[in-house]
Length: 171
Image (cartoon, rainbow, N blue to C red):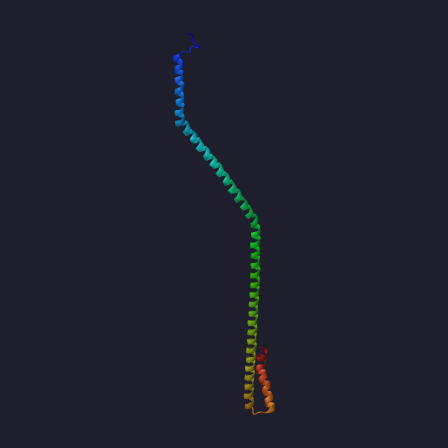
């Protein structure tokens, strides 16, 4: 018998058995090794997809926050102007209040000074009256003593005025 490429029945039988064994070994290994690896790769792929989706959501949220902050920055100028305007108005109110209080205080001080001047004037007038009364009393005493003679009386008045005149009338 001539064999084609030196193939005999035993060799073909061993080759078929080896092919069947490799096929079954492939099936067993596929279930034991390849499926867990595929499952691991699928889980990893799903985790990466979730991370990408989460990153996109975070990026969108960050863009929204950025837009909000930019809007707030635009409004900050308006708020600053409003706050400054309110502060200026309060300052003007305080200024007018302080000025009016100062004017009232000045008016009170002037009124008090006028009252004190009036009191001093009255006091000086009272003192003057007392001096005149004292002069009249001294003159009356001298007139009574001299028995009322007109020449004597005139000389007594002149003498009294000379005694008291310079000191009393100058002060």
